Image (cartoon, rainbow, N blue to C red; front, side, top):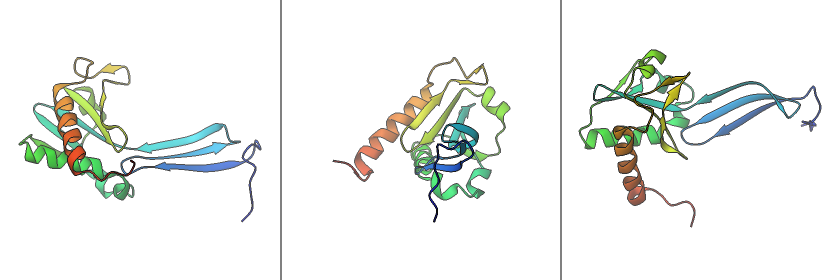
Length: 149
């Protein structure tokens, strides 16, 4: 293997950052200039009383990396009798949603209040996001595996 000086202007680095629920990949030139990047995360929306997750995502190559928090939220919805669906979602669905949130290992459930200069709902963290976040926190406090003392 040959060492590469990442400070050289012509060097290219493939940078990968991954957790259980998000994966970010970037091509970086010269250690500073991002030429391209993508982040795979779980996004869900709440509209008309139903929490909806994108259906096709689990067929992607990222599925093994992003399923834990999503699966827990789906289990919570079932246990709490919250209407939940895995369906095809478009950006326009998010624009018109009552609430949008992302799930992830570090952020657990994180509200999204604006997308492309469009305010989601009333622009605040919605009641379903708060409810699911509270239940998720209680559940992981009692069922989670402690990794740091």
